[in-house]
Image (cartoon, rainbow, N blue to C red; front, top):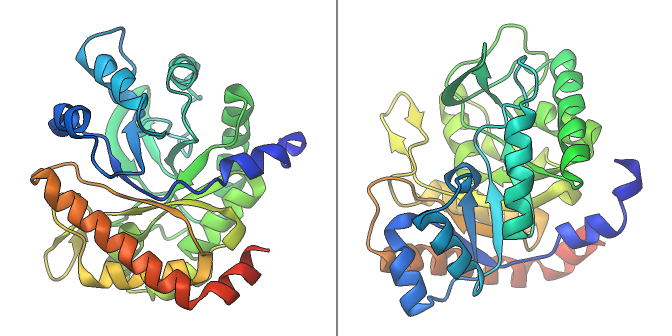
Length: 294
């Protein structure tokens, strides 16, 4: 990976603005109305098919909008061998979509050849750092490009952990020489579940590694919080997002919604809220932000 740290880095850190997750509920509306969305993120696995409506709409919509690809099945933290059949399908989809970048999650999702369909956390140890980083390097070499790793929400912790989640996250991406998809809602959810300061998390992330941010809603049960992507973004997450922008500067940001899908106008309103926060924060912090990005 050492030979790709110049031109590729500049290209991959391109700023896209404010986007949405591309969901089938809105396919026709997007094509008919061409809403004011800067870009769309697709779930990679939804389009690893031979044909049909998903690929038809994908091809039609990507003619008008930049896209990024976001996977849920890489299982880069798992102990099963990397699935090169899956990686070949991913590489073929990359060739079709020509995304701005590709991401997946810092987690494990499979064991014994079975996909558990969940994003499961890792023990935060030096051994895990080395294990995950080596697998990420293998994936990047196979795909011929850097990938982004997203922080997941978590509901359990490991006694073996030797560091904080953000220290682990940073160590992995630096050892693997990959980039970060920083999910602001996941930071908030995990901070509630594990009782840590979410600002400490944001301040522990290296500025130069953050490529994209996610915003989403969750389900709050009082004693615990679950990342469900079926509610609007809440005020504490908006506040954390503002703090993140003040630290990282302009970062491509999108709203995730996967269940209880609202009228599209409601998603556009949330996206506008993100834009307004970005305009305010980045204007106020312009000199400091430029210094940090230099």
